[in-house]
Image 1 (spheres, rainbow, N blue to C red):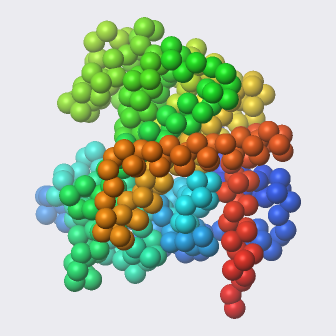
Image 2 (image 1 turned 30 degrees about the vertical axis):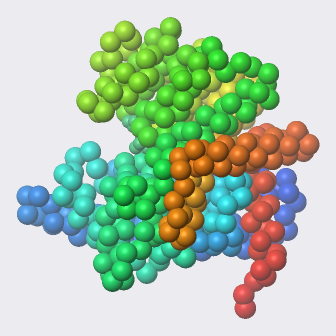
Image 3 (image 1 turned 180 degrees about the vertical axis):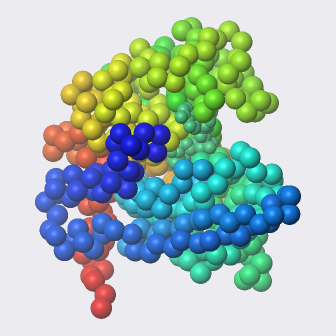
Length: 419
Ligand code: NAD
């Protein structure tokens, strides 16, 4: 999204990733046709009364890419640059991601083209409720379960859950995940994606015989995922030397005090202005001399024009689609170890699955149970992807897609094609 003009759109990238995996699996044409494209695509028009009394029309989307392995699952994104193609790409990646961590979900995604930073809470609530009612026939705990994504959060999920429940006439907590704990959310969900990213970085360090403690890290994006990843790396003794958000980048070669930076971000909404740090350019962060680079913002951050400048040994894709296929080839040729997005950030959907299980059972787990199960799922998924990477001699990205696509292909073979 950041550099769409240079690298093509995210959906083209998703299709290219699929083709590479399908080729490596020698998948037949019929199976490719059956699993490659979204099953359902909905565009909705959302008239919303703004605080000044005027009606503003927003456009929203919900895409269900696959329900072959279970109900569709995927977040809702609010951003000015949301497009249908972006939502289709994100839904496609969700399908392979759920299969990589072997949870019984397919893939979906939703989004509204809007500028949430310039909307009041009241406007956001009215837009969210109108969007929920527009996509209502598609969602439900057995059908399609939304969750937070960029610029949506637990409050957004509470509004979705309330709107859905109001139309049903009874509470349906399992219609969304990432809810507040008091409404049936899971302990450990809000930090799950960052925690999962951390576990995969830990596994990568073990595999490469590198010490995590004392290693240097740069994190692009300091929202939910980037900040928790930075916090866990900081707690594990890594030195987080550079961090950015959409407004700026801060750098300290001795390591940033991450809890203090999180406090500043909470207070001011930005990382810039952090004491004991110098401001640097966005491009400098991606080219930072460090052990681990964590792109945790949006798609296409590392592309054909800047990939050669990357100096990190490990790139951990906390965001979805932050490295383009052209950049993949450059990083591969430089010997960078890539932890691909559908593995790296799968902790979020894994704990969403745990939340859904708890809601369905009306029985809730302790935080330590959630963390223990999450670590196990992420470690097994990393091991499975690494095995394919080594045995088939393919890049980590292709190995992860092979694992995900292969599991969906197996399910479609067993189910057969209706009618
Ligand atoms: P968020 O809205 O909490 O944070 C996004 C952050 O990125 C913000 O700090 C924003 O300022 C920053 N940002 C935006 N543009 C930037 C730029 N050009 N340079 C630097 N920073 C920039 O969103 P999030 O939930 O943390 O999601 C981040 C990424 O992780 C997205 O790609 C999302 O799809 C992916 N992801 C999120 C989850 C989850 O559970 N939240 C799960 C899986 C994947």
